[in-house]
Image (cartoon, rainbow, N blue to C red; front, side, top):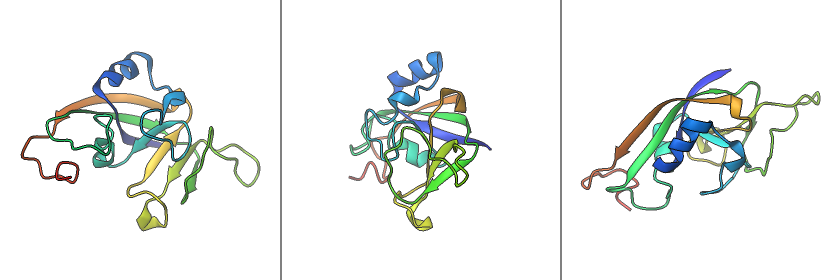
Length: 146
């Protein structure tokens, strides 16, 4: 299945992604890998905003952020409610490999605030559009009021 999702990362990393494509082997190297080493995506831009400056726990006011709007091919995903250290999605009940991981949100019984999607092959994700922005000094979002 094809989805349109978001990927937040530091502006300087976006240039590498646009030139060379996503490299799932680098996924989680800066901020963690709760579901293994892969390319992390979100359906909510606000989730990607947490990673758009490379510092998800810091105050965002005045910081330049970057998010990529992407087309992702999830194929047959594995849905998980718990963290997992994966280098690839698990196999289905018939022993056939699945294609991606979908981390379910807390409202779905999962362990993350908003759904996360993890792909493990570069061909599964295509950047379509770069969004560069800055949180204003008077911003009152959850990142800026910390």
